[in-house]
Length: 107
Image 1 (tube, rainbow, N blue to C red):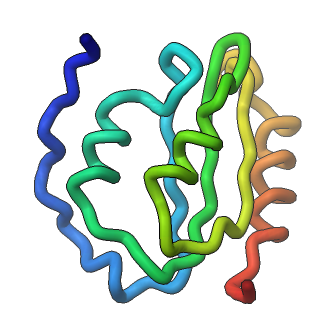
Image 2 (image 1 turned 90 degrees about the horizontal axis):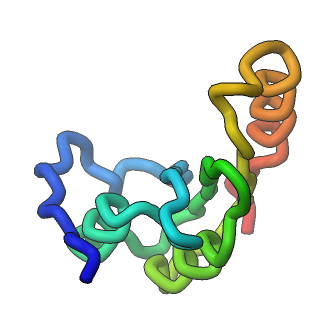
Image 3 (image 1 turned 180 degrees about the vertical axis):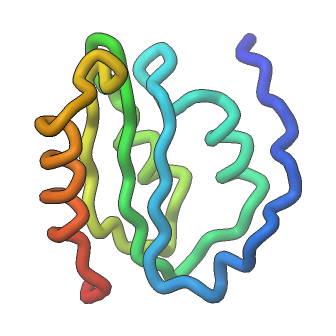
């Protein structure tokens, strides 16, 4: 059984934001258990959500599972990063910057 830690209290009011960017490492083809615990314990609804994940070999069903944890929201974009620590440099920064420009606050 996967241990699901209790998330720390949120220090910001998510209701104040139109776009929320969430990311996590991929563990066993799914978002890591701490982000799963956070999403199960935090009501996020009616937001534009951008998702990213980092992995060493494959994203598995991470985005599918992320979306299942975020009903009532619009997914504004998704991106995955394979071995981002090994990909440091201009190429990674450009990929992130390009993705960020595609995120819009429109549905």
